[in-house]
Amino acid sequence: MFKKKIGIYALTFAMAAMGMTGCSSGSSGNSASELSEVTTQSANNTSSEPFSVVCTIFPEYDWVREILGDHADNVDISYLLDSGVDLHNYQPTADDIMKISTCDLFVYVGGESDEWVEDALAEATNKDMKVINLMDVLGDSAKVEELKEGMQESEHEHEEGEEEYDEHVWLSLKNAKVLCAEIEKNIEAIDSANAADYKANLDSYIAKLSELDNSFQTLVDGSSVKALVFGDRFPFRYFVDDYGLDYFAAFIGCSAESEASFETIMFLSDKINELDCNTVFTLENSNKDIANAVINNSGKKSVQIAELNSLQSVSKDDISNGASYISLMQKNYDVLAGVMK
Image (cartoon, rainbow, N blue to C red; front, side, top):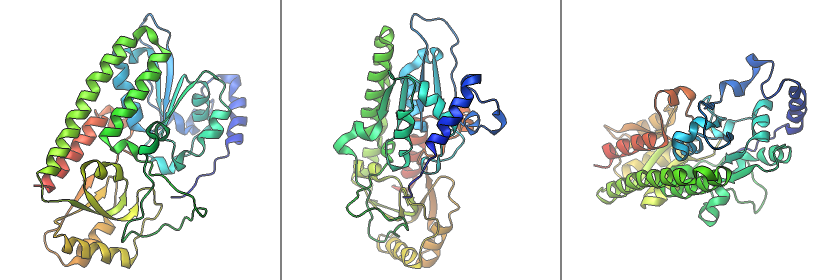
């Protein structure tokens, strides 16, 4: 994966300039954050003080909403990546940094794509802010990124001895239960008056996550398909490990590469013949060029392309149309159920 270098101090200067006009930039037409934010404004009076939460990715945002439940009306929730850009390509704006600086709870993934966060937090004005780093919460359960047989290596070189961890922790329903519990604990600390409601919401939501988790396990246990072939990046390491599935893919999950080498394509083509696969998987928004090349070079007839959603590019329009963490993971179940007959 490629590292991002953010001019955080330039953003800090811009923040100072914006201080004259409050939290919103005067040049709203040029502010990406105004297009990449979902906000729930205070709509009624409650016994607790309004507070604000900033989330980087969609799963965090949706988990927060589920835990808040009816109290979401009293919370300003910002989702920074809702323009559809994924975690690996995101660059925070000055307005985004300002929102983080003043929020009560900040939730982020904590992988290499989030290297900019350290400087942003150092400039925060709310010193009582609670911060959740998802990868830190998982601790030893976080997995080192795996360069598997047949994968094309990224041009990005890491320093000798440096380990890069797989950021895509949200694609494990088991991880989701742990992370939601941590979010609930922090929200409860901010708003103890409604602690009982938050705990009840968490229990109800974890029951739904567990039900879907069990469904995936039952599906895999009853299927002869035990390996997935991806003509794409592979962010599903946590997911396949949960259910004992093997996989083969063109690139690691955080790769910046978009064109596979002939050797990688031929490896995957040979693999679908060896495994007698009838499906090559891609991610959402894929142009499917690599998957088609793999299928064409295999010579195998009637191989389909199926799409799994990594929940990395969920937009505000998707949210308006009812997208949720569970609904998108359920769609992944439905796709796999059609393949793992």
